[in-house]
Image (cartoon, rainbow, N blue to C red; front, side, top):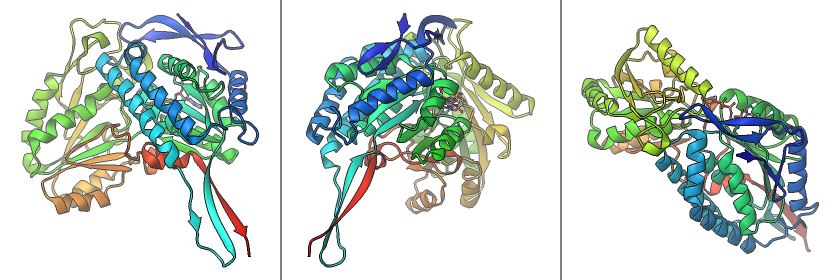
Length: 482
Ligand code: NDP
């Protein structure tokens, strides 16, 4: 199978003819190729998007009324639902995620498109009080052509939350998916064309991050850039955007803590805590990767978690086990090396999951691991693993819990488990995070809920109405009439 870029509502081969192998993570075998795009392909895509916008918002996409734009997005959501199984199959083969997880991703994508479709005709400005003799109003206009650099962990969901919001605001999009997760995104651009989005509204250029991705983040025609990925690459993208005064949203992952107090409902908490780290094999920016447990219940909690971890299995997507393989050989080697280093440092394993008998030895499998008594300043407590590895540590009181929770460079999500309502609210205000969940934990969830980080987890917000506002340019019009 050979996949090309999708530009101007057509499949377009990379201009150099260069291609990249697409590898099945459950076997390590290549099964397709994608185009290795470069700055010239990106230029081609940006030009197509600029034509869809027109010089003065008079292009075939920009001149649609909000109702027409919303209707197209509703049709897109319905088409994604109809193609959900096909999209899930592509995604599972490409990224290794369990088929059921990929199906959920397709459903969430449809929900993003539906949510933003419903926002389009509610996106309005204000009239503002000002000096006598004036009427002042604000209007929200599209920004222009937006760039979207999408990682491999939740390609469909992240496409939905960033491209969906940008289209709802009336922008045209150029997307650079991860080289390890391009297939569903290419198909999504085709589906957009099939439901009637004008040529140039949604364009996809595949390739390597350092080539196509870097070209997109530096392109002067890109007026807004959304990036989800590592802190290091995020800094490069943010710098390239700043050089040309381009707004950026950076979502850079985390080391998100769950704080479990001795009055918590453990039956409710523990399954959620396990899921928050093993979901998508731990390859989730908002994974609950640190578990802080009040000392009085620490041993009891670890015993119960150990039993749950021992039952976790990794296997190919078609087996629909708790976890699939990791996405690629590099991530596999990286996670395994971290686990080995942590053990070599003397940190104890409390429990491990297993790799299913049916899984290929050449696949990129990593069993779930629960580490206990993890020192707060260790690599495991401080650095994102991006694998199914949970770091548990005890705390004595509320202040100590907050200090531990806030004691990393990150601040994406936090979870608090307690029956004490005042404590829950107190902690929600003290925790340095973009989202705080009380007595639940929504790793990646909540189409309607603004999402993003503080500190090294990035800036700007995705999801919800807040994200939509970020994809608009606010213009103030002051009219003197007396
Ligand atoms: P990267 O941050 O390098 O990749 C994320 C996206 O950025 C991909 O689409 C990638 O393309 C692209 N990219 C890479 N280099 C550049 C560049 N110079 N300019 C513009 N875009 C670029 O992450 P990795 O895939 O290397 O994963 C490494 C670690 O990053 C993970 O272990 C995890 O800790 C973190 N990560 C966090 C994610 C999150 O959800 N917050 C998602 C993915 C990773 P390509 O893949 O083609 O190189």
